[in-house]
Structure formats: structure tokens, C-alpha cells
Length: 349
Image (cartoon, rainbow, N blue to C red):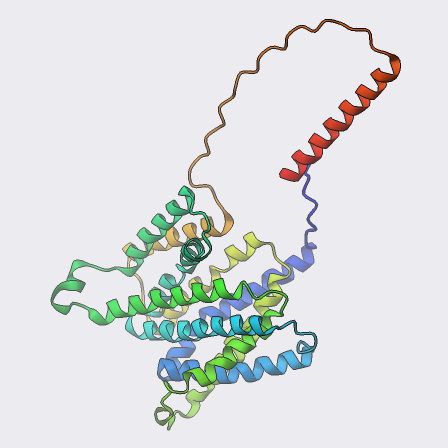
């Protein structure tokens, strides 16, 4: 009989969470198209995403009453802001990589984030790196090399330097996202919507020196793409995502997260005709499988069975007369010890 007493969500609640997270990931997959179609520079795109996203998220939080009993302390605000610095520049480098590589390649390379979270945990918090985690990291690295599609020619006489820089920007974006994840995890007892609001609001003054407003003249109808990034890909997407996390178990969240790169690759092909090679396609399941392995704790190597120690035979005891009262007490004590052992075993599972 199972000893797991954790309450499981009702089937209808879990179904609703699955729909919400799937929609959020589909929206994430169309992010690259909105960025490219806006025609704005990556830093301008991030600036206006933060501006429109902060307005929409702030209104949502006010309507929902999240500002009451917000749970913030000066330390939590500082951590949220620090995470926001990494989030904002993560977006900027990811959007830069779209132009230098493609939406498909940049998105798949960007999805190596979980491995940097593991490495940062080991460096900053001395988390244990097991042989299994090292194995998944190795598999992901092989997948990354295949997806990147780098050849020796890329390094000869300058080669395709723009493409190499784009790959580096996607990797840097993933590292920045990992830093943001590690930092934001330490902000507890606060609605995630409020943490996101602080981060996108911080992005407005942070990116002001990098924005080129002169380039925005004559943008015309393309402003709609920038407004969409703030309203759809920031406010609506975050609301759907945070709502789904409360309804779904971790394994399902980890699996549905890969709807994002799948939709991004489909959109890149449908809108821009970008296709990845067969060799690059071989690397995608390696990255996906390794990421799921790290997130879900899959065993990569079979565990060795513990060596059984021979139990010595007990020495024959000389029978002694025992009073009736003592016999009852001994029996009760033995029963209590066995019950306690069962409780400990159950708790250790």
C-alpha cells in the first residue's frame, strides 16, 4: 500500500492547468516572430516589452489585490531586482541571437538553461554533482554541438563569425537566465506576479541608456508587435504560466515546457522558411532528454545493489522461568519497537 499522502489535484483542475501551460508555451514559441517582425533593435524591443509589460502586469496585480499583504522585505526586493537585471539582459542577448543565427537554433541552444542552473548550484551553494548529473550534462553538450552545426570552416579566415557570435549570445542568454532562476528562487512568500512586475519595471531605467528612440520613427504599424510583446508575451503569458504551476505536478510541467521550442521551430519554418539540417535535428532529442533527466531526476546509470552481510546465527539461549507480568511487558515493548520501526521506514520513503 502506498504511503504517499500528498494531495493530488483533481482531474479537471489538472486538465485546466495543462491547457493553461500549453497556451503559455505556444505564446512563448511565437516570441521570436514578434521580435523580428517589429523591425526594432533588440535593446529597443526589450525596453518596450518592459514598458508595456509593466503597465499590463501592474494593472492586473492591482485588480487582483496583490499589492495588499505583498510579503516583500527590503532583502526580497533587492533579490528580485538583482534577478531582474539578469532577466532583462537575458532577453536582449536572446533577441540578438535571433538575427545572427535563426529563431530555431537560438531557441534550442537557449534551452540548455537547466544545466547551468545545476552548475551554478554546485558553485554557489555547493550542491552535490552526481555521476548521473555529469552524464546528462555530457549528453546535452553533444546535443548542443550537433544543433549548433559548427564546422572547422567556421573558424578559418574569420569564417562565419556572425553565426558564432549569435551562438555565443544564445548561450550567454541561457547563463543569465540560470542566474536569474537561482536568485529568484530565494524570494519566497511573494506572489510571482509581483516579482515579475519588479523585474520588468526595473528594465525600463536599466535599458534607457541602450535604447535608440531615433530608430523608432516611422515604425508605423510595427508598433503593434511591440505592444503585443508586452501584453501577450509578458502579462498574459506570465499569468497563464503562474496559474498552471499551482495545478500541475512537476513532471508534467517539465514535459510541457518543450512545447515552447517545438512551436518556435515550427513558426520559424512557416514564416521564414528556416529549416535545420538532419545533423542538427539529431541533437534536439539529446538536449530534450537530458533536460528532462535533470529536471525529473532520472537515473542514467543503474544503481549498484548493496552487498548483503551474512547474519550470524544466534547462540542458543538457556530457558529461564519468566513471571507472567514480565512476559506481558516484554511482549508489549517488542510490539511497540516494531511499530516504531515501521513508522520510521514509512517516513524514510
